[in-house]
Amino acid sequence: MTIQLLRGTTRRFSATMMIALFVGLVSLTSVAADKKSAPAPSHSTPAPSRPAGGGASHGPTGGGGASHGPTAGGAGSHGPTTGGASHGPTANGAGTHTSTTTTTHSTTTTTHTTTTVGGAHPGGVGGAQGPMSGAHSTAIRSGPAPRGSNEHVTRTGSAVRTRPDGRVSDVHDTRRGMDVHNNLGGGHRAMVERPDHSRVFAERGRPGYVERGYAYHGHDFARRAYFYHGHEYNRFYRGYGFRGLALSVYAPGFYFGPGFYGWAYNPWAAPITFGWGWGGNPWFGFYGGYFQPYPVYPSAAFWLTDYIISQDLQAAYAAHIEAGEEAGAPAAGGGGQPVLTPEVKQMIADEVKAQLALENQEAQQNAAGQDVDPGSSGIARLLSDGRPHVFVAGGNLDVTDSNGQECVVSDGDTLQMQAAPPADATTANLVVLSSKGKPECQISQTVQVQLTDLQEMQNHMRESIDQGLKDLQDKQGKDGLPSAPPSAQAAPAPAQYASVAPPPDPNVGTEIAQVDQQSGQAEKDVSTEAAQDNGGAAVAAPDAGAAPAPAAPASVSLGQTTDQVQAALGTPARVANLGAKVIYYYNGMKVVFKDGKVSDVQ
Image 1 (cartoon, rainbow, N blue to C red):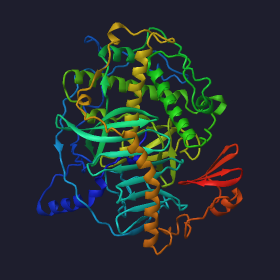
Image 2: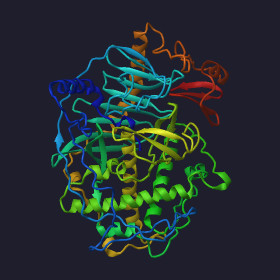
Image 3: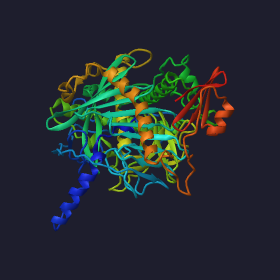
């Protein structure tokens, strides 16, 4: 789910770190550069752990015997098959080789500057945890910057970035400690880092959270207390350093027993049918051209694949409805086949199986009181095993293609990393395998994804698998699901690091709502400050090769007609027709009409 504003404060301190590095290089005749050392996150971050080999080679075991699972039987193209045998990991996980490094924080003062991005940044755009790689520095902590975008850093160190059409995409407000991002697909999110380095994240129409860090066995962990529609729940993460980035890898709050992982990993005695009960739900009809469930399930991996995708699509649809929007019409499948093809779903199922095997190994380490290696369960392993990997987007994520043009991937879209990036890269190239149509990235398009965002996609898959496993255990023997053996029916055991986490804030929902409310004012304040730096002119002027930006923001007034708005702003990126209510979407802006006249501008 999500995800770009989860970066901490590291970039804020990058200038001090670079100075320290320069002094060290001058004073020493030889320095062995450790590419895996991490910059300072919001709390101390352990040095990177080395992946335990190149991935697991044996299946989950119950009583010491190797378990076997289904393969694609030659990669059948019309659904799951049950031929062949594959293997997952054993319980002999590699020991953890991490040490904790604590760095002090410093403050940088930035004079106001204006920058026009003429193309994609060389080497990609650094995320929240790393410095920008390119011709200029940036205070914006949400990347990447599309070609032709403009960024203005004010004299107070705040910053505003606009897209090529002049609409605001990102704001960094130093006074509030807030970062705001307006997604290309219409989403709006904000992150605040508080003086104690806890964080509050708010996203309209979706769960928000309050994150607090804590230590366990000398390692950094964080608890995110999520809040959505009056319901609160917790997720846990462990920090680790990788390629100069401070990443957070999902740490399950509980583990099942080996017998349950073996039952979920291995083929069931016979393929089963399952009634999901989606027939009357609007989201299922709306996304019918994109996704269809399997007719039968030979094992839990395929059931979990449909579970993950269905949860994502339900979340996307609910977010649009809650925001008073209508989701963009998904692309129709060719010849009646859904866009999310059986071949792509098979790839997802294979990833699910690998995660089941990995979690079985972690569960045995947890039961033995051993620390789980975050390098093994994070993207460090995926980048080192020499195999392609598929990721499922768990929220809206703006990315850029090889030409620096911006597009978005959203809930349930799938991307494949066909080859690992170079050893010093902080971004990876992925190919879009399925998407739901504009403004989303197109199928077969290659896009650049920051490793911080890639880790969040990996986290999302593991979180969704754990939710699905809990549902699967609760529903086993019902609605067509096979009954689990007695060894698979024991209640999950809490993870040791989760049991010692500090309690969440008592007013999580209120804190999230306050950040959301303040984000709009932060955007106005920083944009005004940037305009004042320029004597009231636009915050930036594009170069000759970029799309022109207006000299001042185009004016839209209440009561204007659709024709008047299009004359001022141009043709909208998309239109949601909700009867008497119509919404025009522009990049970073929505114009709401009622009975043909402007009733609200957001």
